[in-house]
Every structure is written in structure tokens, then in C-alpha cells.
Length: 219
Ligand SMILES: C[S@@+](CC[C@H](N)C(=O)[O-])C[C@H]1O[C@@H](n2cnc3c(N)ncnc32)[C@H](O)[C@@H]1O
Image 1 (cartoon, rainbow, N blue to C red):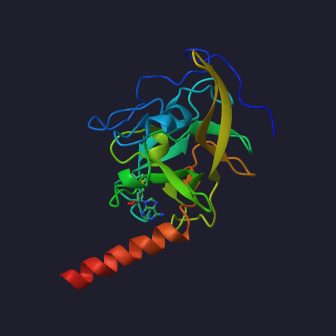
Image 2: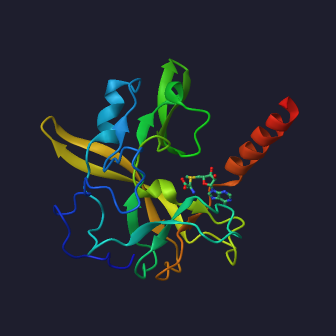
């Protein structure tokens, strides 16, 4: 992995509590993920403990920008753009929002990202998964503005991707493992001025089409 963009920043690698420019006034800004009221207490430490980022950037790498190209499928909405060249395989930022499990899912959210499927023993011979996700629909950070590459003029693939990481953090109650989902540049990096584009995955767009078809059927 190439060297991260290391340099001075506010607070020795701690994410700033000040929202970036163009942050929407009505959406609370979250430097770290926060727990949903129904998230079991034993999961809060794993997903919401502040954890050091893998790199410290010298100044911001990205900017939230209104999409003014009418040919862009998210025209009139916002996107996240590189303000300087981002080298390949570079950590850019973590995805923050409200961490919830399957009981706290908002089925209408377009900002919900799976964090981890946590194996659980249900009974002696029966196991399953606890579905943990982070939803940035109502609060979050700049990562919530990253659009999908599909239909964006001149783009045929994503240039950033999600990657999860586990960080050992020392707390007053000893060492704990903390899980984060970060946004990383792909193998070609992101040139200055380009929009950061993810692949939301086919499942996202399939579900979206199904919702649209259901809405048409109901009307
Ligand atoms: C996580 S948000 C991305 C940020 C959003 N543009 C905003 O301003 O809040 C996901 C939403 O962005 C829009 N979007 C993102 N990528 C898109 C694409 N390739 N085509 C159409 N809509 C897209 C859709 O409305 C989707 O529900």
C-alpha cells in the first residue's frame, strides 16, 4: 500500500467536529458514528468508540459540491469531489452515521451501509448473524454524498470503494476492537477535480427499481 498523505491536521488525526463547506444545515454532522437508541449496549463499544484514522491528511482531500451537469443522474443533488490528486489505495474518510441492527433499520433510507454481519449463537446447534449497519440518512459526514458511478457521463467504473477495518483501541476498561467502514481510492486513484464515485452494488438498484414499480402499480 502506498504511503498515506501524512501531514499536520487539527487534533492529531482526530476528525474535525466542524462540518465541511456546503454541509446541509438541517443534517447533524457526525465526526464519529453514534448508536441508535435500540442498539444493544454490548455493540456500542465495537462500532461507536472513537478510533484513530489510518492516515492524517494535510488539509481536506474532498469537497461537497452541487451537481450542475443536467446529464448527471444526480443533477441538482450533491456529490463529493477531489480537491487534490488522491493517490491509489489511499484512505479518504470513514463513513459515519447512526449505527443500528436489524431492529433499527429504516427501509426508506438511501444512505444505509452494512458494517458487519456479526456471528451469534442462537441455540446450542443453531447460529445466525446480527446485522449491523450505519445509516447516514439523517446525520453523518461527507461520505454520505458519494454517488454511484452508473449513468454518470464519461464514467464506466467506480474510482473509490468501501473497505472495513478493525482497530485495537485502548479504553479505560482495557483494549477493545473497533470496526469502521472507510472510503478508499481504487487502483487508479482520483485525479484532482474528479467526482468520487462508488458502486452501490446491483442489489441497491434492483431494490430501487422494485420500489419504483410498486409506486407505479399503486397509483
Ligand atoms: C448516498 S446518496 C448520495 C448523495 C446524494 N446525491 C445527495 O445529494 O444527498 C444516494 C442517492 O443519491 C442519488 N444517486 C447517487 N448516485 C446515483 C446515480 N448513479 N444515479 C441516480 N441517482 C444517484 C440517488 O438519489 C440515491 O438515492
